[in-house]
Image (cartoon, rainbow, N blue to C red; front, side, top):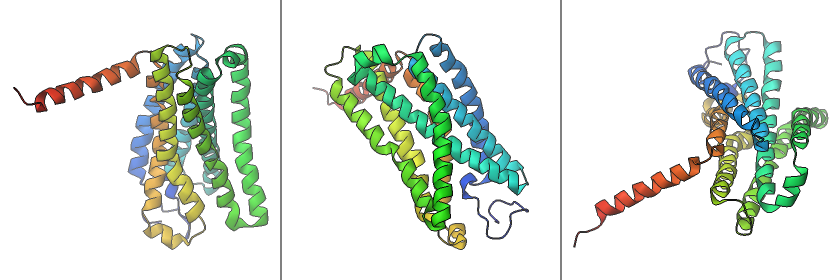
Length: 282
């Protein structure tokens, strides 16, 4: 494949997932630094009994695995090891989506079902749920892929893509249910804003960064590889996919107390300044 400058690429093999090598290097370098810093910062919240922090740490760990796979993809030359790294990368992507669902579910339960959350959603429950995500997410994808390949190789991307689309209605339901339950909730106002901010951010990360690649995976994987070479849209979608770990680092910002209030106050101040400038003098 000429676009990557990999001399060992066999004919007919396309690796659109990693986009231009320079872009991969830049994203990986910045992402590794931000992810490690975010893990250290979120760990301090775990010690303060923030249950959602456990899910965020696991999400960031899956991001680290993705970066390691990206580094190997642009530096390695063994195609057998490359295939293993690719499987690990896809599995870690499903794990990331799984923990995004856990974060949204935890925030929804805190507002919509506070009594259940207080007495049932313990640290032990969170640890068990994390283990289930780490085990079931990659096993489900690999099982679906193997089953569909045995039946018809052309439907494998459709089955896997459909499985990866299932979290979208869950994110919308959690956000809508949380907003509906806000008026009856006794959670402080600043906590409500942070909860809604996290849910909105999770939904945006999924729809803007994951969804384009999932749709293209379902529609383009069975097309001729020459079409993929001339089409730059898959490259852009997979670059968005590589940016998703960078966006995950912003979850810590929304978890800190006062962050949303400072952001809203700065926006309001900018709006007030703009109104003062544009308002006519009497």
